[in-house]
Image (cartoon, rainbow, N blue to C red; front, side):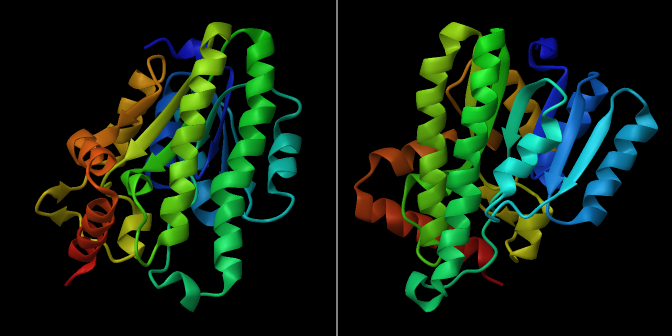
Length: 262
Protein backbone atom coordinates (compact mmCIF):
# COMPACT_ATOMS: atom_id res chain seq x y z
CA UNK A 1 0.00 0.00 0.00
CA UNK A 2 1.93 3.02 -1.31
CA UNK A 3 0.13 6.01 0.16
CA UNK A 4 2.59 8.54 -1.28
CA UNK A 5 0.52 8.21 -4.48
CA UNK A 6 -2.20 10.15 -2.63
CA UNK A 7 -0.30 12.99 -0.94
CA UNK A 8 0.62 15.49 0.15
CA UNK A 9 -2.92 16.41 1.30
CA UNK A 10 -6.16 14.47 1.71
CA UNK A 11 -9.58 16.13 1.97
CA UNK A 12 -11.98 14.06 4.07
CA UNK A 13 -15.68 14.94 4.15
CA UNK A 14 -17.22 13.47 7.28
CA UNK A 15 -13.83 13.41 8.98
CA UNK A 16 -14.89 14.10 12.56
CA UNK A 17 -15.90 10.58 13.65
CA UNK A 18 -16.38 6.98 12.60
CA UNK A 19 -14.91 5.85 9.29
CA UNK A 20 -13.88 9.36 8.26
CA UNK A 21 -11.88 9.90 11.45
CA UNK A 22 -10.31 6.46 11.05
CA UNK A 23 -9.18 7.39 7.54
CA UNK A 24 -7.75 10.67 8.83
CA UNK A 25 -5.73 9.06 11.63
CA UNK A 26 -4.33 6.36 9.34
CA UNK A 27 -3.35 8.83 6.65
CA UNK A 28 -1.81 11.28 9.10
CA UNK A 29 0.21 8.46 10.67
CA UNK A 30 1.62 7.81 7.19
CA UNK A 31 2.63 11.45 6.86
CA UNK A 32 -0.23 12.67 4.66
CA UNK A 33 -1.67 16.04 5.71
CA UNK A 34 -5.43 16.16 6.13
CA UNK A 35 -8.29 18.60 5.80
CA UNK A 36 -11.15 17.43 8.01
CA UNK A 37 -14.63 18.53 6.94
CA UNK A 38 -17.73 18.06 9.08
CA UNK A 39 -20.59 20.03 10.54
CA UNK A 40 -19.77 19.99 14.26
CA UNK A 41 -16.61 21.88 15.27
CA UNK A 42 -16.14 20.06 18.58
CA UNK A 43 -15.63 16.54 17.20
CA UNK A 44 -13.54 17.99 14.36
CA UNK A 45 -11.12 19.54 16.81
CA UNK A 46 -10.90 16.33 18.82
CA UNK A 47 -9.63 14.41 15.79
CA UNK A 48 -7.39 17.30 14.77
CA UNK A 49 -5.86 17.36 18.26
CA UNK A 50 -5.00 13.67 18.02
CA UNK A 51 -3.23 14.28 14.72
CA UNK A 52 -1.36 17.34 16.02
CA UNK A 53 -0.27 15.44 19.13
CA UNK A 54 1.22 12.67 16.99
CA UNK A 55 3.20 15.26 15.07
CA UNK A 56 3.44 13.26 11.84
CA UNK A 57 1.25 15.46 9.63
CA UNK A 58 -0.43 18.85 9.33
CA UNK A 59 -4.16 19.18 9.78
CA UNK A 60 -6.83 21.74 8.93
CA UNK A 61 -10.49 21.74 9.90
CA UNK A 62 -13.52 23.11 8.10
CA UNK A 63 -16.79 23.19 10.03
CA UNK A 64 -19.38 22.98 7.27
CA UNK A 65 -22.86 21.66 6.58
CA UNK A 66 -22.35 19.89 3.24
CA UNK A 67 -26.00 20.43 2.32
CA UNK A 68 -25.60 24.21 2.03
CA UNK A 69 -25.51 25.94 -1.34
CA UNK A 70 -21.89 27.10 -1.05
CA UNK A 71 -20.46 23.91 0.49
CA UNK A 72 -18.38 22.78 -2.48
CA UNK A 73 -17.00 26.28 -3.07
CA UNK A 74 -15.92 26.52 0.57
CA UNK A 75 -14.07 23.21 0.32
CA UNK A 76 -12.33 24.43 -2.83
CA UNK A 77 -11.35 27.67 -1.11
CA UNK A 78 -9.96 25.78 1.89
CA UNK A 79 -7.64 23.76 -0.38
CA UNK A 80 -6.67 26.26 -3.09
CA UNK A 81 -3.18 26.70 -1.66
CA UNK A 82 -2.37 22.99 -1.27
CA UNK A 83 -2.17 19.92 -3.50
CA UNK A 84 -4.95 17.47 -2.67
CA UNK A 85 -3.99 13.98 -3.79
CA UNK A 86 -6.87 12.14 -2.13
CA UNK A 87 -10.56 12.95 -1.79
CA UNK A 88 -12.58 10.82 0.62
CA UNK A 89 -16.29 11.62 0.63
CA UNK A 90 -17.77 9.95 3.70
CA UNK A 91 -20.79 12.13 4.49
CA UNK A 92 -24.55 11.83 4.28
CA UNK A 93 -25.86 9.32 6.82
CA UNK A 94 -29.59 8.97 7.38
CA UNK A 95 -30.84 10.43 10.65
CA UNK A 96 -34.60 9.98 10.47
CA UNK A 97 -36.69 6.98 9.46
CA UNK A 98 -40.13 7.83 8.10
CA UNK A 99 -42.06 7.62 4.85
CA UNK A 100 -40.91 9.92 2.06
CA UNK A 101 -44.20 11.82 1.73
CA UNK A 102 -44.49 12.31 5.50
CA UNK A 103 -41.32 14.39 5.57
CA UNK A 104 -40.81 17.93 4.43
CA UNK A 105 -39.43 17.82 0.90
CA UNK A 106 -36.46 19.89 2.08
CA UNK A 107 -35.18 16.72 3.79
CA UNK A 108 -34.92 15.13 0.36
CA UNK A 109 -33.34 18.12 -1.36
CA UNK A 110 -30.75 18.45 1.40
CA UNK A 111 -29.90 14.77 1.02
CA UNK A 112 -29.49 15.28 -2.73
CA UNK A 113 -27.13 18.19 -2.08
CA UNK A 114 -25.07 16.30 0.50
CA UNK A 115 -24.92 12.89 -1.20
CA UNK A 116 -25.10 13.78 -4.90
CA UNK A 117 -24.41 17.41 -5.79
CA UNK A 118 -21.44 18.15 -3.53
CA UNK A 119 -19.52 14.89 -4.13
CA UNK A 120 -20.10 15.35 -7.87
CA UNK A 121 -18.66 18.87 -7.82
CA UNK A 122 -15.71 17.89 -5.63
CA UNK A 123 -14.91 14.78 -7.67
CA UNK A 124 -14.90 16.94 -10.80
CA UNK A 125 -12.72 19.63 -9.20
CA UNK A 126 -10.13 17.42 -7.53
CA UNK A 127 -10.33 14.67 -10.15
CA UNK A 128 -9.43 17.12 -12.90
CA UNK A 129 -6.39 18.32 -10.99
CA UNK A 130 -5.33 14.76 -10.20
CA UNK A 131 -5.62 13.74 -13.86
CA UNK A 132 -3.43 16.68 -14.89
CA UNK A 133 -0.76 15.60 -12.35
CA UNK A 134 -1.02 11.94 -13.31
CA UNK A 135 -1.70 10.64 -9.81
CA UNK A 136 -4.22 10.72 -6.96
CA UNK A 137 -7.22 8.93 -5.53
CA UNK A 138 -10.93 9.33 -4.84
CA UNK A 139 -12.98 7.25 -2.41
CA UNK A 140 -16.76 7.66 -2.47
CA UNK A 141 -18.24 5.93 0.57
CA UNK A 142 -21.57 4.26 -0.08
CA UNK A 143 -23.90 1.76 1.52
CA UNK A 144 -25.30 -1.66 0.71
CA UNK A 145 -28.65 0.09 1.13
CA UNK A 146 -27.93 1.71 -2.23
CA UNK A 147 -28.60 -1.60 -3.97
CA UNK A 148 -32.34 -1.41 -3.35
CA UNK A 149 -34.94 1.17 -2.45
CA UNK A 150 -35.23 1.47 1.30
CA UNK A 151 -38.64 1.97 2.91
CA UNK A 152 -38.52 4.88 5.42
CA UNK A 153 -35.15 5.91 3.94
CA UNK A 154 -36.02 6.16 0.26
CA UNK A 155 -33.97 9.29 -0.51
CA UNK A 156 -30.92 7.99 1.35
CA UNK A 157 -30.82 4.69 -0.50
CA UNK A 158 -31.47 6.43 -3.84
CA UNK A 159 -28.58 8.84 -3.27
CA UNK A 160 -26.20 6.06 -2.27
CA UNK A 161 -27.02 4.24 -5.51
CA UNK A 162 -25.82 7.34 -7.36
CA UNK A 163 -22.51 7.37 -5.46
CA UNK A 164 -21.40 3.85 -6.31
CA UNK A 165 -22.42 4.15 -9.96
CA UNK A 166 -20.47 7.42 -10.20
CA UNK A 167 -17.45 5.71 -8.65
CA UNK A 168 -17.56 2.94 -11.25
CA UNK A 169 -17.61 5.39 -14.15
CA UNK A 170 -14.83 7.54 -12.72
CA UNK A 171 -12.71 4.46 -12.06
CA UNK A 172 -12.76 3.58 -15.75
CA UNK A 173 -12.16 7.14 -16.96
CA UNK A 174 -9.36 8.13 -14.58
CA UNK A 175 -7.42 4.89 -14.17
CA UNK A 176 -5.43 5.35 -17.44
CA UNK A 177 -4.27 8.71 -16.04
CA UNK A 178 -2.86 7.32 -12.78
CA UNK A 179 -5.85 8.31 -10.66
CA UNK A 180 -7.43 5.55 -8.56
CA UNK A 181 -11.15 5.57 -7.73
CA UNK A 182 -13.00 3.33 -5.29
CA UNK A 183 -16.64 3.04 -4.36
CA UNK A 184 -16.31 1.82 -0.77
CA UNK A 185 -19.67 0.23 -0.01
CA UNK A 186 -20.31 -0.16 3.71
CA UNK A 187 -22.37 -2.82 5.36
CA UNK A 188 -23.20 -2.57 9.06
CA UNK A 189 -20.46 -0.46 10.67
CA UNK A 190 -20.09 0.44 14.34
CA UNK A 191 -20.07 4.23 14.05
CA UNK A 192 -21.45 7.06 16.22
CA UNK A 193 -23.92 7.88 13.45
CA UNK A 194 -25.22 4.32 13.56
CA UNK A 195 -25.58 4.55 17.34
CA UNK A 196 -27.47 7.86 17.11
CA UNK A 197 -29.96 6.21 14.77
CA UNK A 198 -30.57 3.56 17.41
CA UNK A 199 -29.26 0.77 15.21
CA UNK A 200 -27.91 -2.31 16.98
CA UNK A 201 -24.39 -3.45 16.13
CA UNK A 202 -24.81 -7.11 17.05
CA UNK A 203 -27.87 -8.21 15.08
CA UNK A 204 -27.41 -11.84 13.91
CA UNK A 205 -26.24 -11.77 10.31
CA UNK A 206 -25.36 -8.08 10.53
CA UNK A 207 -22.46 -7.88 12.98
CA UNK A 208 -20.94 -4.44 12.56
CA UNK A 209 -17.40 -3.85 11.34
CA UNK A 210 -15.15 -1.37 13.13
CA UNK A 211 -14.40 2.00 11.49
CA UNK A 212 -10.68 1.24 11.67
CA UNK A 213 -11.01 -2.03 9.75
CA UNK A 214 -13.24 -0.39 7.13
CA UNK A 215 -10.76 2.45 6.58
CA UNK A 216 -7.91 -0.03 6.27
CA UNK A 217 -9.82 -2.03 3.69
CA UNK A 218 -10.57 1.14 1.75
CA UNK A 219 -6.93 2.19 1.56
CA UNK A 220 -5.84 -1.31 0.57
CA UNK A 221 -8.43 -1.59 -2.19
CA UNK A 222 -8.16 1.94 -3.60
CA UNK A 223 -5.52 1.02 -6.17
CA UNK A 224 -7.69 -1.90 -7.34
CA UNK A 225 -11.27 -0.56 -7.47
CA UNK A 226 -13.86 0.01 -8.66
CA UNK A 227 -16.05 -1.34 -5.82
CA UNK A 228 -15.23 -2.91 -2.47
CA UNK A 229 -17.80 -4.18 0.02
CA UNK A 230 -16.34 -3.68 3.48
CA UNK A 231 -16.72 -5.76 6.60
CA UNK A 232 -17.61 -8.97 4.79
CA UNK A 233 -20.77 -7.50 3.25
CA UNK A 234 -20.08 -8.85 -0.25
CA UNK A 235 -22.54 -11.77 0.00
CA UNK A 236 -25.41 -9.58 1.20
CA UNK A 237 -24.65 -7.00 -1.49
CA UNK A 238 -24.63 -9.60 -4.26
CA UNK A 239 -27.94 -11.00 -3.04
CA UNK A 240 -29.48 -7.54 -3.29
CA UNK A 241 -28.04 -6.91 -6.75
CA UNK A 242 -29.23 -10.17 -8.31
CA UNK A 243 -32.57 -11.06 -6.72
CA UNK A 244 -35.94 -9.84 -8.03
CA UNK A 245 -36.33 -6.16 -7.17
CA UNK A 246 -39.42 -6.58 -4.98
CA UNK A 247 -37.56 -9.18 -2.94
CA UNK A 248 -34.54 -6.89 -2.63
CA UNK A 249 -36.66 -4.04 -1.28
CA UNK A 250 -38.25 -6.39 1.24
CA UNK A 251 -34.81 -7.61 2.32
CA UNK A 252 -33.57 -4.06 2.92
CA UNK A 253 -36.72 -3.27 4.88
CA UNK A 254 -36.40 -6.40 7.02
CA UNK A 255 -32.70 -5.80 7.67
CA UNK A 256 -33.37 -2.21 8.77
CA UNK A 257 -36.24 -3.28 10.99
CA UNK A 258 -34.11 -5.98 12.62
CA UNK A 259 -31.28 -3.55 13.37
CA UNK A 260 -33.64 -0.93 14.78
CA UNK A 261 -35.83 -3.25 16.85
CA UNK A 262 -35.50 -3.36 20.60
